[in-house]
Length: 468
Image (cartoon, rainbow, N blue to C red; front, side, top):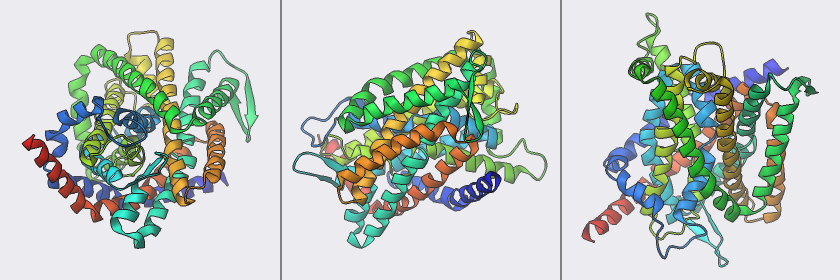
């Protein structure tokens, strides 16, 4: 029965994340990049400046930086540690190259999403803001496309509840805890016919309790939490990875060559180059999108709450999220795995990155595993929090503002967090991939349909800036 279920999940994952969706996502990123004249290159310095300099006099619930941190709290998660490892194991080192490509063009996509989120948002009399793809589909494309907006909101609510927001995150945390305590904690308990370490069970329970305490406070508590934790955890993780890479500096050039060759199947046996390239591309793009969420339409939900009156400005701030998440953090993980040759030794998931840290850091293996475990806990916990906000806003839209339904959903979300440790690694990631892909379709259609507005808004804003 379980084998059949896994086969069904594998088949669905292959259907959703087949070449058509990959080509669709990449094509839109390329199209927007060209129409916006390489905006992610020319205006990245401006975007990084706006990221830390809040706009004066803007309307919204939280500052632009808080909105970005809320979005980053949802994107910087197990995808940066476990997802990168999973992609490299499945698609080889070349998968990291395709993550870079997806992120580069994804920056233009994320910019467009942030711009539309602010342009088409609803602010109630009490200051509550609701915005995102469901509103820029309904308000930008017209009410006759409300069904498409409903589809996005439904997929977003399910993705948060059953995929990217719950199972994958808490599963990554508890697996890391289990690996770290495997030698010292021998007590286990049988759950659903499987034996689980008492440390895994207690870790899952603790994460569930702490998540519930934060989620009860709503957006304000989530954004306050994210502004403190997200910058700290990102900087700490990058520093740890830089120590590892400095310790293996001589291996970096050959690792980069291996990544580029793997991306185009140049190391495959004769006749298998195209197949190897397709696998590397599929796994790299899928995990890249899972990590930075460019094209999925999730980040605009947080961007809509930013205190700003300039859609373009918030689009630029949103764009930095993809740069930080994938170009910086995922690269740190990927290079660490490749230089330590941890990707092809029969490990999976967090075990791959754990091996890289234990083999590569100039610390004791126990300390290296502990550092990874702590990074993973912070990364995954913030994603649980951020994705709850996203998916609750989707439920709010679906139910026309029924906060009672939102409250019921919140408790279901917490229940899913509680059950996360007992899902298998492969099934967890494939389920998340499926709903991520389904979310992307309505959002990508909207980006194509509203691309004229994106270009016009951008031209008008940058022309105004030039005259100042």
